[in-house]
Structures are given as structure tokens and as C-alpha cells.
Image (tube, rainbow, N blue to C red; front, side, top):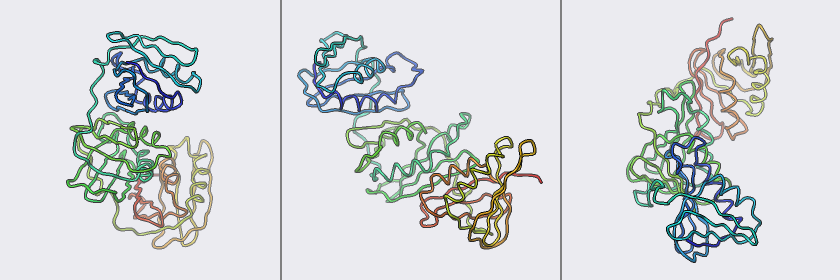
Length: 369
């Protein structure tokens, strides 16, 4: 293999792809990047067997071929080279990889490309197409609610559902639930539902960045493939049945509170200062035009703040985990939110005031006077 490419382009793609590599790789080959050149493309791939990331750069391919190289060492070399053309050279039947840039020369040892796990091709049924920015928002507004409890693996990922022109992302840890819906650019013929690991979602959001255009999502056996531009994210799916989340979304309410998002966010954040040593619980109580946000930890102290709101219905006093509230308010993307309550021991629902595509449900915390 002998290829020439841009240092800047190669560095950017290597930094993205390397994020798929685990710090505790189960096999030496999983600590390596696969470099594969053909036509006018140098393809770079990494995987930890749960998530695979593949990207490519335009290159002058003088001799096609493939090799795997240690990701950390290769990445450090590329980052520290000047912004100039790079030549990567591997002799046939050899695993020594020579990297040349101007007067700088490196030689590193790799492993045969044949040992690298196979990545699925572009075959399979196209599941959906969705705007890149919209998908990024949907992931951001749901993935923070996934569970970290490995004894319930089906809750440690984001539940992805595509049906007709509708797309849904759902995440829950049992104490809260985040649901984001959106319209797909391309409808699907058959309903698709899958639980995607949170790591995949986190890396997808990070890599998409300011990317524009469409994300194409393809089903391949027990994997989903997210493709945008020159990048592909190949994700293993989590086995198991996602719980019937629709049942926990309240449909009737006894109190409705309309409040400024940033105003409530700041009040909850302040109240949480004296709640950190007491299960991080804050209390809410609204009557007509005033919402009282408070916390009380006997060993630490207490806090109370009143903010202006519009409240209708019964007066309900309820307590929530402050972090759960802050997570939701931080991701609302709306100047005002609506808080809908049924009772002090019933789940509450939080949503943006100007659209119904985002719903956040959180369980109350039982407190004693």
C-alpha cells in the first residue's frame, strides 16, 4: 500500500474514528486503526465490537492495500506532523508502516488487516433519513436520561422507533423519562424499533458537530448504521424489551404551571445547594402567580425562593430530585415551560410551552415534614 493525503484531513478523521476504541481493548487488534486504500480514498476504521466508526479522506492511491496500525501511536504521529502532504507506505506482506512528511520519517509496527473485525457493507434496508441537526437535538434531549444500571441493560440505551414519517427517541432510568418525536425526511415501510447504546449516541452527537444534510439510518442484522457525509457509525443493538413507556406518561392533570425556563433553572440550582446532602431533593409549591422553590437539610440549612408563574388548578406540593429537574430544564430549548402535576406522589410532566415534540416525565420523591 502506498498513499498520499492531506495531514489536516487525516488528523481530523483519525481523531473522530479513534473514539470508538476502548481503553480496555479485549484483543490487541481492537487497539488498532484499519487503514484501507482503494481508488481515490483512504478509509479509516476503528471498533470496540459495540461501536464501529468509519471515515475516509481523499487520497492519491499509488498502490492499493490495507494494514492496521496502533491507534494511539498513529494518532500522535499525525497530530504532530506539519500541515503538509503525508505519504503512508507498506510493503506487500509486511506490517511495518512507514509515514513520511517533508523530511520527517516514522516507521511503526502494525498487524495484518485480515485480523481486523469485518464491518458491514452498505447493504441492508434503509430505515430512515432525518436532518442531521434535528437528530443531534433529539439525542441531546433524551440520552441524559438513560440508566447506568448494568443489571437492566435494556435501560442503558436510547430506544429508537421509526414508523411511517414519525421518529421517536426515548430514554428512561426508571425515575424519569425523556421522549422526543420528529418527522422523518424519508418514511419507512415497516416499523423499526431498537435500543441503541448510550455510547453510540454520545459519539454520534460529538462527531456530527455542525454537520449539515441528512443522516441515513440503515438496518443490518442486529446493528444500526448511521451514515452522514463520509462517516459511518455502526452500532450493536442492546438485546431485550424496552418497557411500555407510554403507560407512565400522564394524560390528566390537576395543576398546570407556566414558568420561564431560565428563571426556574436558576431557582432550582440555588435550592440544590442546601439539598446536596439530603438526597438532592427540592420542593415545589405553586398558587396562582407564585411558585415557591425550597430545600431543607437539617444538618446543612435551608433555602427558599419565590418566582412569578401562571398557575391553574389545585395547589399541589411536590418534591423532585434536583438533578433530574436541572437535566430537563437545561435541554428544553424553550423560553418557557409547562409543568403539569397530578398529585404530590404522582409523576409530573415538563414540556416546552411552544411545542409538544418534547416530553419529560419525572417521578416525585416522598418527603416528610
